[in-house]
Structures are given as structure tokens and as C-alpha cells.
Length: 400
Ligand SMILES: *Cc1c(COP(=O)(O)O)cnc(C)c1O
Image 1 (cartoon, rainbow, N blue to C red):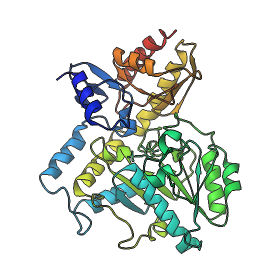
Image 2 (cartoon, helix red, strand yellow):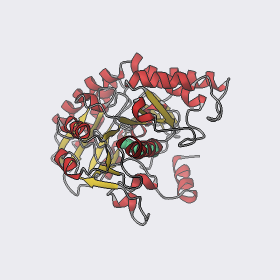
Image 3 (spheres, helix red, strand yellow):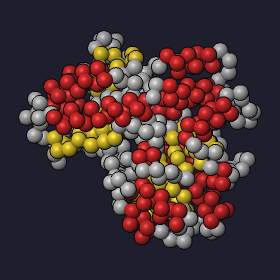
Image 4 (cartoon, rainbow, N blue to C red):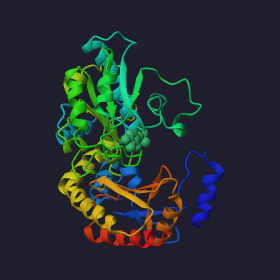
């Protein structure tokens, strides 16, 4: 079968809830993927930063194989001999006292919302049903009904009503707007330290620290969604570390699964996590031994290979080199670590640029029409990065 045959199958039998670039991936290794015809591409999306450790990392694959010989699924009705080790490793990696494992990112966000609402009643003393959570414009926290109720993106929300009440949305990167939105019923503020899906929007330095201060002053939980920015992507283990603005709850996902399977979690200290009591929350697959084996290996790879330092160093080179490219349509290059984006002028259609990049051997996807995100696996070497930059340069300099 050829690439087009696989695309036709997706079109015919799938729901059309995505508009993928016409390319089929049949194999992958490290920061490269291969199509059925054997053409090799740099992967500059990394499954939206879920493949920070690179495709098929040998250490993670070994952990999977070993675990497949033992046990894969137990449910939480019983203990298993992997979950505790995973939770300990995740707590040590993040610097929190407790972790609660789920599967997808959206579930981690749901879990954080539930934690904050309960905490609001049981610790802060808000009347149940009156809890308010402050969120921000252009957020992306996932696709469930609760989560899209925070969104102002028409693509994600139109005709899915009724939406979940209890959210108040304010502009991003405006700490005063958050302060003004606070009421006695506010239990939490939730935001992304850098807005990935919105086009790698980096707030001005000091924003996160200021929000942290507002939350502390008003006895409000500060929730950061680090699902895309976390696990070394921005040059630190977590993006909040750039400002020392430690959140009360962190939502984690994507690269926690080491590019193998969905693994998500929230982490928080005991004073918050204690609101969960037996029967009050759960997931059949959350904390399964296979996922925990993968999670342990995924975290070890980040530490052993110092992927935070690699992202920091190579990110600087990437932005510097992109800044040198002569393309009159490019307005701005922005990002942190290896989470970067190129903004073209308003109304510019970046889809065609993504097709040209594909033909030249590099996969990236536009967001909001005129923005292309560049986020390779963090295991990429400087030599590979420079090869990829040469591809991007060749394509950009041909844009009329
Ligand atoms: C991808 C993403 C999510 C949702 O994760 P899923 O695993 O797709 O549910 C939530 N928040 C952010 C910031 C994300 O990038």
C-alpha cells in the first residue's frame, strides 16, 4: 500500500475531526520519521511535545518489553508493584509531595478542576456550587466538555452546549485582569506558562510570578497546565522555573508517556491532594503497571541525557539562525528552549509552507493559519538541528 491508500482509508472510515498534513508515517527513530515510500523526514512537531525523548528511545522500549513479560493492567482495585515507584520518581522529579495518575492530558486538567473545587469547599470554605475558577483567553487545555467550557476558540466549542458553568475568562498575560476577577468564591486560576496551541505565546517575564503572588494573597490555588511545556521542552524541567513561580497544582501529560502511550497526572502537596478520598475520583487505566514502567523510564531519560540543557542550548541556536533567514513575510520568531514558532504576516497561509517543508524533508504544522510551530524531539543533536535549519532556510527563502 502507498501513502495515498492510507490517507484514503482515513478519509473514508474516519470522522473528519482533524485536517492532517498529507504525509503518512510508517516508521520512526529519534528525531526522524519515515513514510511508506521510504522518504525520511525530521519530526518538528514531536506529537505536540509528547515525543521529547525521541521516537522509540531504546531505554523506554526496554522498559516496555520487560514489563510486557510481567503484568500490564491491574486496575486500582489492587496495588501493583510499579505504581508506587513511578509516583515516587514523579514526585522527586517535580518537587511535589503527591501525584495522581490519569491517562490523557484533558483528564489531568479535569482532575485539577475537581481538586480545586473540592479544596474550595473543604479548605477555603466556599459554598458547594459557588466555586469559581479563573481561566484565560486563547487557552488550550484539551477537549472534554468541562475543559472546552474554558475555551474561547469557536472551532473547539461551537454547538457543544450547554457548557459547564463556574469559569471566568480574562485576557492572557495580564495579571491585573486576574486580580480584578477575583471574588470570595474564587478557588483557582488555571493557565499555561506558555500558550502552545495559541501559537507559542510567551507572556512577558514576571507574569507568572505576579499571578503566583495574587493567588497566595487571596488564598487561591495556582494551577499550571504544563502538559505541553513540561518535561524539559522549554529548557527547564518545567516552564514555571524560569520565574520561580511554583504552582499549587501542575497538570502533566504528553512527554510523561515517553512517546509510547498516554500517561498523565497532577502533582500537588498533601494539603491539596488530601481532598481526594476513596471513591471520589479514579480511572481504570490510571496508574497501570505498563504505563508506570514507561513513565519511570521516560523521566530517567530526561535526567540522564540532560534534555533540559540540550533544549536550552539548541533553542538559542534555533532562534538565532531563524532570525537570520531572509523572508519578508516572516514577522517574528519566538519561543523558549525547543518550543518555538515563526509568525508570518496576518492572513498569510502557512499550510503551503508546511507542504513545501514536507517535500524538503521536514514535518511541521501550522497553527492559526499564519504561525508554524517548530518543536523537535529534545534528543536532537546540534548537527541534526543545523541540517533541519538549512531545510527551513531553503524553503523560507523561496517564499514570494
Ligand atoms: C495537548 C494538551 C492538552 C490535552 O492533552 P490530551 O492528552 O490531548 O488530552 C492539555 N493542555 C495542553 C497545554 C496541551 O498542550
